[in-house]
Length: 284
Image (spheres, rainbow, N blue to C red):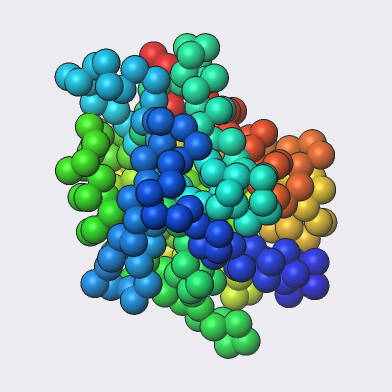
């Protein structure tokens, strides 16, 4: 593995829940709701959940909404909890603007905070040098515990076509893996700057194995910044080719973008949120 990619994801694997809000502190916006210390029977660490509800949610009690679950939740909304202090994905701002412009269907977005076990939970196979390989357990936490909990607390549409999963870097890798493994539950995937390199690019082999078993291809946004490093760009381009070979249709079920000037950080991913939402959750 090239040093540039190792160092990037070593840094990102440290995106733990440091600097969390003190108990009772408000979130940055009244439409962001924090659920603390969500437990799991599958994994030892508790994790916080932060939930965005769209404009008008409280005024339309009869309405239900599609939902997007996203990894690394502390980096999405709140500058006080983000890995780089003050720098977030600006997900609320981007979603609000897209919804109010009539581009995107109003939706609920759930940010799942990572834990100190991020590298293990976000990787599907164990690497002999770096460890990892607990993504299946994380997937059970997600599908059997978090999704049902959110459905009891919020007016979400629970059908496959209304349920998305997203993330970047190792979060993008686990999004792709769990989106394929649990394709009956996730019909939309946001895969930003994925760590294709993990364990000798084994995700490409898994894609080849799993794709023939999926009856309906999930709609998939895939991107990479052209400033993320030559090998990273090459790996994500290889993933794009493999998706097309497995019958994802560009412009239909697949959008691939090499983002001009894009880098491997929250500020760059923030600029991709609105177009990603436009593709996955377009307004009718």
